[in-house]
Image (cartoon, rainbow, N blue to C red):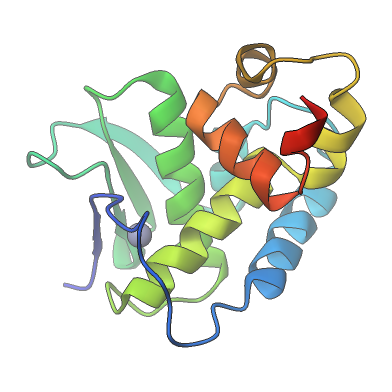
Length: 164
Ligand SMILES: [Zn+2]
């Protein structure tokens, strides 16, 4: 059976191939637009259900955060993970789904799914809009229901770190 097993261990991956980040962000923006989602926190579980995917919590093997089972149209999330991590893992798997990745194929696919997840949960336009009001990574993390680490990455990608 084809499936993804995700341990999220791609942070230091330097892609040789073009990661096509702009494409990944555009696909994420389209998902939000189609669903009419205009502010955080993004209802990522509803977005999965809208795509016809079933989301379940399960005891997954150690080190595995999430599994996408395309044949069963099911995403399994490790039930022992913090809520914000489950949200990011779910967004990451949605990335594999919407970007049409065949199966656990490459580090490139992992990097693309992470870019999609960041763009889905923390769109740079929203971040730019919110920054004057929510001035700390902690306040932004609470508003977006993501980790502070995810906020830092989003701020860096949007070149907004110096605005904190
Ligand atoms: Zn993945």
